Amino acid sequence: MSAFSSNWLKLQSQLPTSKRKGARLPKGKRKSEDAEGEAQQFSKKNKRGNAETAQVKKGKKNRKAPSLTSMIQLELGRWEIMDSLVEAYDQHVSPVLGGNSTLRNEQKRKRHLESWLWSRLFFPLLPLGEPTTTAISAGDEALQRKLCNAGLSKKEARRRIERLATVLSSEIPSSTEKIVVQVEENTMTTLKCGKRQVQLLREYFAKLKSLTQRKAEDFNQAAFLVLARYRILQVHDKGGGNQGAIPPAVFNALREWWPHSEPVEAFASPLNTLAGKGSYHSAFSDTDRIFGSRGSFFDSSFEEGLVEVNPPFDEYLVLRAANFCRSCLEEAELGQKSLAFVIIIPETDWPGHAAFLQSKFKKWSLSLPSGSHFYQVGNQHVNRQRSYPASRNTTVLLLASPMIKKTKLLRHRIDEAFRLRP
Image (tube, rainbow, N blue to C red; front, top):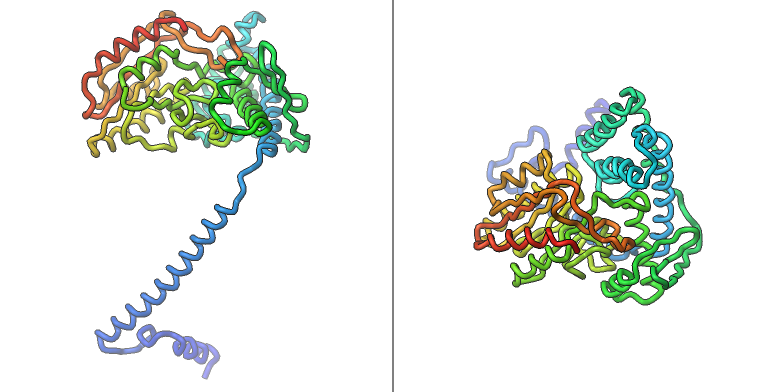
């Protein structure tokens, strides 16, 4: 007998009878043995799967969250990269855009960098999620058009944008610096760590304290961490133009119209929240949960309530918000729940703007002319001049499930509240 035949017979002898080649059993018995074998295999797989699941759960339970010290060390590295990126922009992009050297023009030129970074969701520097290739391309093309209009060739404009992208993707330098946060109280509260310092108005420092129960040392570290994160998101000292907040009078109008529960903020931060602990979503769950954030708006689900949606003025974030709100309202409609979103976005030709206006859940929309209504500045925690007149028209909409009636009064009150300078 050949070696092949011998091995084949040996293999056949190890198989269940019904699986052997050429075996003939009564039909009922064949099915019975097959079913028994499959059941045994399923049982083994199920036990193995349960064991693996238990192991994963155990691993998650035992996994320690990073310490505040290690998080600050990482944040200091991120700050170094942002400084390098701004330096590269100032050297290779800003001078091309022209204009005089006044602070106002410098801020305007830097705003193009902020918009470009938002199109990329600051990826991979900050944990905002991964951008789509479409959003990246659109952001690159927008900056490229500005550079070409200023006189650069397409090739040279692309080269300079690629240089920015390379810096943004740099490996975050590790820091072994001992983390000691010092607090100095004056007209401003200053928190220092090594060569870095962050400042905020004293009332905002008190606000952070009111949002957490941390002990003094832990609180100081957590406060430095969250301030460092938002300073990086701000891009530069005078940044934050894409993060204007609604005035308190507007949020109070929402409270008065919806007395059933505290309205929820979809895009806020520990520094600018009007709703307070447990009633706001923010960009960074890792730094913000300590101060009562509910995490990312897009990671949540809404069945009932009132949600104020004022996303950063970025084309793809607005579209994503439109799709998300539609999905939530469809679920609320099916469940016959009372859910409403008050949307506040710039008046643009963006697809997200059109999606909001065309929504079947729209109760009303309102157009606020530029110059006649106000926002709070994105860096209000350091800026005593906390409000500014809007530089372009704003669209306000109410999207609500069919259960919600009588909404015209809210439209009138929001219109009035936006026109009051804080």
